[in-house]
Length: 213
Image 1: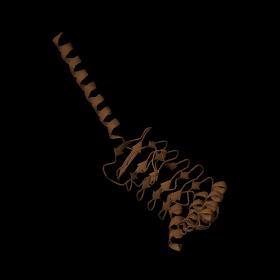
Image 2 (image 1 turned 90 degrees about the horizontal axis):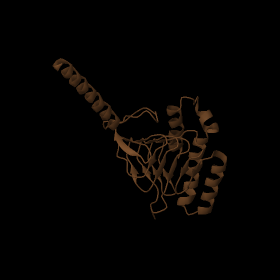
Image 3 (image 1 turned 135 degrees about the vertical axis):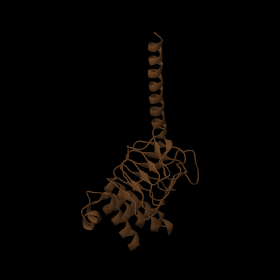
Image 4 (image 1 turned 180 degrees about the vertical axis):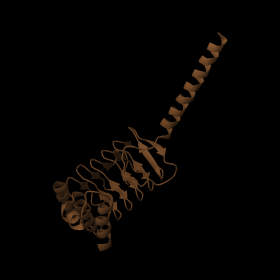
């Protein structure tokens, strides 16, 4: 428990340039408080004290603006930045060292039973306002851009952008940046390259026409 708590504090210090020290994180950061409360609620939930677990989670919701169902499984090193408006559903599974920004929903679609919510791998970043809905997996090192609505699986080392989200690769390499919006889009790059080639061809055609005259 103490190792997990230490990992959660260090996650904030490593990823938030505004965080100055461990005491500030422990006493003042709403995202950290939400994760800490969830770990207590989850313990009661797993030991079949469901009412107490839910009471802790709802109390945390009113104090921090973050609603995490006590049944959700969360790995170490989760950083919820700002926190307000974050909703994490009952059957959500979150791996280690993930980052979640404000107004994110890890929820269900209302059509599924049993496992209804997403599974995030390790080192996943979910940008502000993003919605990840359904019982699929977001692979290790994946990134969900701000405002994206993800309704299907995201492979490891990929980025999902748009509404509904489409998946774009980042050369299969983990991105160390926490930039939520400036992501590589190979489709857009290919279109730009294609337009450039058309422009070159058009200029060559114009030159030939002039030479014929």
